[in-house]
Image 1 (cartoon, rainbow, N blue to C red):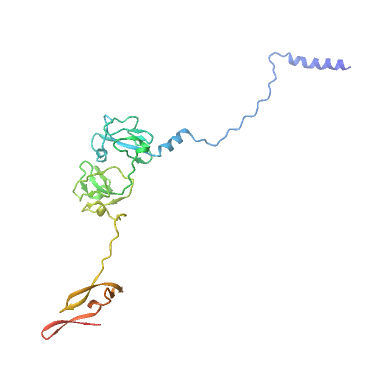
Image 2 (tube, helix red, strand yellow; image 1 turned 45 degrees about the vertical axis):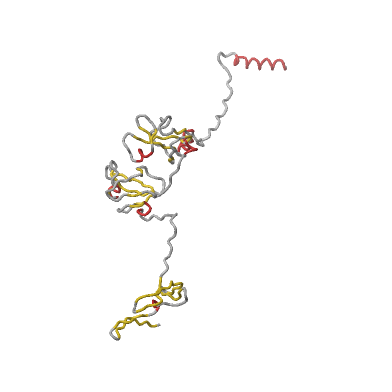
Length: 270
């Protein structure tokens, strides 16, 4: 009986296995879940590095030969700014700049000494205050600030160091820069002069404190004229109450001129 059952089972299974091209395909595995959390791109990391800053030098535009900063600060024709990353080697003045860019990158700007070197080791930071004056860009002749406030063509702000000299209106700006500074800026009085004094609302942090002048009080008068003084050491409501020799001069008394015996005399009352 057991043999007959096995034969019947084989009879039903065999036709299935003999069908041409028929194979049994196992079920496909479930797809793996894909994370939707955005990953930082290499481009973003590079942008962060660029924001750290750059070195700027002044070059001859046609040859990229490095020259003194003064030419670019005064916007002289044929000269332009050239930029390097902080880890680049900066050429010395007189050498040709390579592997930099004429396009200003983002970030803080630094300068390099004339001898050049690795940017991060030689970079110079200048955050000193400046006085800003409005000038005709081609001549640097100072004009009214309102021309730059209104954005008039061919006029620009010119920035002079706080330890420099500011020209009066009509004078020529020198030793400054058209480059916007990184420190505080102050407007200047029309009369010009030493920048620290010409700067409106500027307080020099290194200036010595002004000494208060001691007032002198008259202690002796003859015919209304003071012949002796003593410095006041104590006042009450701006009235001297004590002097160096502990006496009070006529200034603390009420005095009047009296005409008597054909002459004027001065009388004071306590």
